[in-house]
Length: 212
Image (tube, rainbow, N blue to C red; front, top):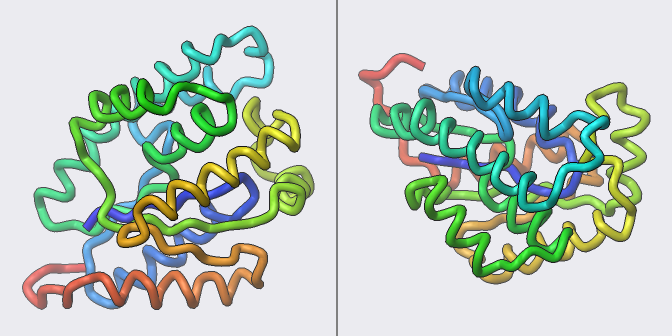
């Protein structure tokens, strides 16, 4: 099963993935965690370029294509092989981030972006997307004070991040069978409890013949 975590910056996706994966492993599932952009040696090098605060001259089309390059490598090198072997794959961001950030946030053409995403992913879509929703003002404050990575995309205007959040809400409304929204302003333990409940409700029983 392919599960993605999406949402505005500061929603806690990265900090929630690890505990969720550990919980599922203890429940008997084989679990792989990965992230975007990155997740492969090639993708991690692309990530450095994308996130570098010094790359202020990066054109929006350049940004979009670099994300797709990293994504294509991750899908073919990591995600598809593990799904084929029956693993649960948890991915911190995926194709919907491009629609939210470069589409709704930057005003990119959504039709063109959908075509690019289909090419980059080979048509691979998540089975479940967990939307960790948080007000952009709260999320950006968390990013600034949390001691983690502060990157080129974080440094965009508040209005940009508000458009991104609205985009996520629109995407979730378009495909309610795949998306489940979680209030990421809640205490982290409560967010984790809800994530576990949602994921377990979608997963089949783990096979006793497989090692976690």
